Image 1 (cartoon, rainbow, N blue to C red):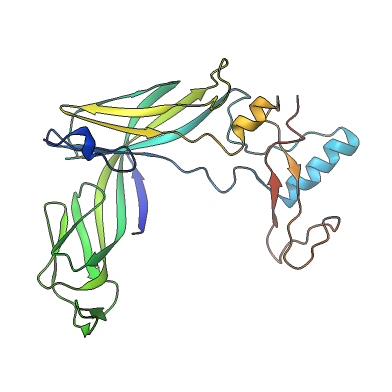
Image 2 (cartoon, rainbow, N blue to C red):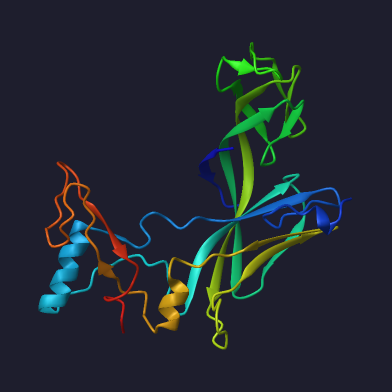
Length: 272
């Protein structure tokens, strides 16, 4: 299953054993799907210009490059956490085990979700649906229970589920409006911890239910803290070029663009 989300930001009874692998459970007539925002591709990455600044800092005591290591300082980081309640007006309380959490900001999102259907009459969607914008099969060619090609059956949406009037194998695509609540979690180091020094979880509690998500710190954040590396300043730069394996060769920027170079996350330039 794949999901593509476009954001428009506006401010504004089961048992616990039924929890899924993400720690989400739904009982008491509702559910809250908690998700941590992903660390961006720019975290722990630099451009050619950053490389020049880094060399200047090493050789001529110039200014260090501003590289995003994902840390507020050596001992804390912040990340977005999203709550997707079902129904969308479900009342719940959110908290964090280590750190602070602020918000929410209400966001209207457009979700384009691909649903795999395997001889099922109905399949649930990932988020609460406000308005269905489009629903279609991903392909005109589907298969029946015997593996024979068959025509696509009619697709329908009702009560958070995609339904079909014929059992088939295939993928359906539904585009719909939904809402979520965006929070900002700030996690501080647990100084007396031997490992998992940034351990923290966010949980939502509602009438009869609980949902939990364990937060992942930025890449190498724990290693850098234990090795006494200040991760806010930068990193060792490693040139990666598919056309030339020589690490000593200067990077070549493509025409009209700036070359992006991988780096080992915060190992040298961040040392305080």
